[in-house]
Amino acid sequence: MKFKKLVLTGAAGRLGSYLREPLSQMCEEFVSSDIVDTLSNLAPNETYVKADLTKLDEIVALLEGADMVVHFGAIGDEAPMDELWGPNFYGAYTVWEAAYRNKVRRVVYASSIHAVGMHKKSDFIGIDAPHRPDTFYGLAKCFAEDLASLYWDKRGVESVCMRILSCAQVSNPRAVGSWLSYDDLIHLVKRAIDTPITGFSVVYGVSNNDRAPVDNSKAQHLGYRPKDNAEKYAEEIYKEYGALDPQDPSNTCHGGPFASVELGNSGVAFLNLNPEDTAKS
Ligand SMILES: NC(=O)c1ccc[n+]([C@@H]2O[C@H](COP(=O)([O-])OP(=O)(O)OC[C@H]3O[C@@H](n4cnc5c(N)ncnc54)[C@H](O)[C@@H]3O)[C@@H](O)[C@H]2O)c1
Image (tube, rainbow, N blue to C red; front, side, top):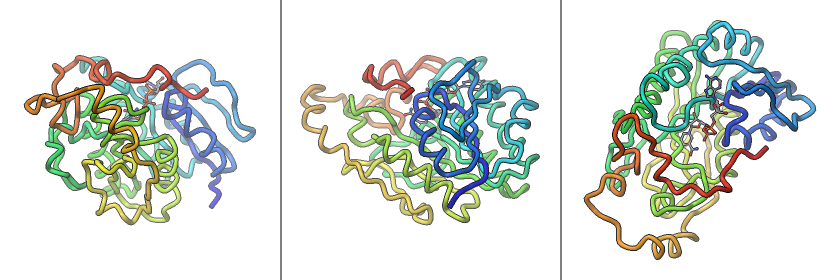
């Protein structure tokens, strides 16, 4: 199915940079957006529009004529509320409100496991687990998911909230369960776009890992069937890290280090991310 126009926010970011090319192939007109000045390697049907998520007029103009918006722009880590308030909270409002004003059919949203990060991994939560954020960052994801629910119930804007677990190379024991490969991310976003009817949907963004700690069985209608499996990294990673403290929330809760950091302090700093995990272009 070819759409007329798709818009991607956060296009200069790490995940956005992996989505640009596949999304450009799904539509006639593809608009990448971010707050940076320029973006290189544009596809033939791609234009770049600089827009600030905290400016409603800019986001309303950005979404004009769009079939759907894929919303990945945000601050991607825990930070003080002052820093998150604009891009992650109000910036979510501007996207859903602009979608409504422009009659955009659907918002495909990069939510996060951190919306439910204080749940225990042993609870094997489903998509209907109550919100239980681990940080202000996770609270912003809860807020955006509730906006998505509200704009569906009251204004008919569809949403797919993809609670991504961790989309980066497997570099710590948590990621053996939580890994979402870049290929599976692309597959997930494609399905969130091309499923004809989604209403308000939630799905976990996780690969087909033997030790995936979440249950997507109530999101079958999206047809998301991940292929990659982090089990191939398990032996090496577990050997490297040795015994883990079974009382430490960063080992027992879905949020990993976000479950144990002080509010306002970075969680990403404790993820031991591989330096190769940078934006694609
Ligand atoms: N990387 C992961 O594993 C992961 C996990 C769960 C959720 N997510 C979510 O996925 C999305 C993308 O994550 P990422 O890892 O690519 O992060 P990233 O920081 O690399 O990309 C985010 C982009 O948003 C842009 N942005 C920030 N403030 C903006 C503003 N005011 N106006 C316009 N653009 C703005 C940034 O410039 C950046 O390019 C985020 O919403 C993040 O919360 C990521």
